[in-house]
Length: 124
Image (tube, rainbow, N blue to C red):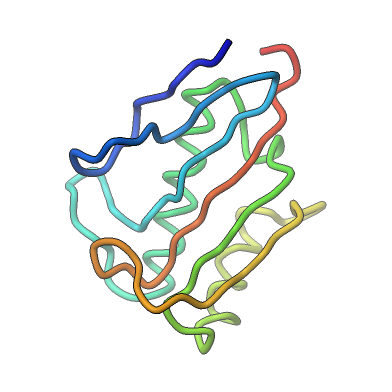
């Protein structure tokens, strides 16, 4: 059985911001889009907003950032790797999840960073 989380959806696209199944929460890629629907300006602001959005979707699913076991970070330029890490460290200060970071040609809405995650929700 799966449970789809719809809170935090950006645009009218055919996806769920998160799906909970088998004690795991699979969070779709989060962009640096605020509640106003606008993309934040610059890498640091987008990374922070994307991680706040990730945190909010997890909360809706019944989890926290401490439950995250794996993230994927997609950057439009690997030159932003260190700046992204500065923001990322604030959200995962100790025992960070396993992570993959990739450079891609383009991200949705002209974003410069996107973050997805897998969290263990343990019988929630």
